[in-house]
Amino acid sequence: MNSLRLVGLVILVLLFSCKQSKSPQIIEELITDNTFCKATAQSVFTSLGFDEYREIVKIDHPRIVYADESSNLPRIQPNHNRITAGRLQNGILEIDLEVTLGDFYFEDESRPGLRLAAIGEKGELPSIPAPMIRVKEGTVIRASIRNTLSDSTL
Image 1 (cartoon, rainbow, N blue to C red):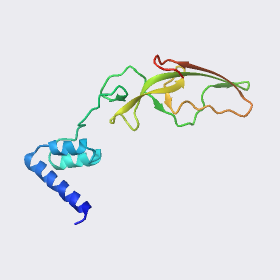
Image 2 (cartoon, rainbow, N blue to C red):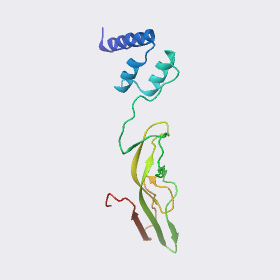
Image 3 (cartoon, rainbow, N blue to C red):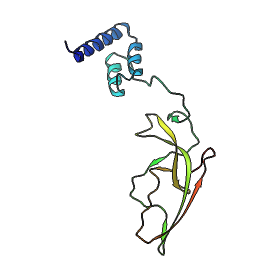
Image 4 (cartoon, helix red, strand yellow):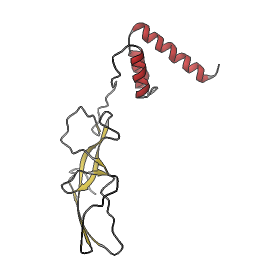
């Protein structure tokens, strides 16, 4: 018997024992050990008759954020690099940027996000990557960058 079939057999035995005891504890331990992805965990939970999959572990770290926790920080927006930043007038690009902390969610708010330093135009939400600066050769750029982070230097 090859090792892949053996692993599958062990998982089936574990799932059967979970179903018999109606206890999701074994499945929770498997998920915590990153054996299953979230989609697999959801289908396993529902096939065993449990209401729904729930997040098992929340990591307490100052840079990890969860949507159900309140935050006074701005939400960092993805920058698709389609709109240039600043104001171009008479061959001079003027741009005012700010570095701030914000909360960034990679896919959507149902998954954990990160608290990051990001750059945005003054008065706008910060973005990742930073605002796009695109000019023709020879254009003068007048840039102002303000660091609002109290614990770091740019």
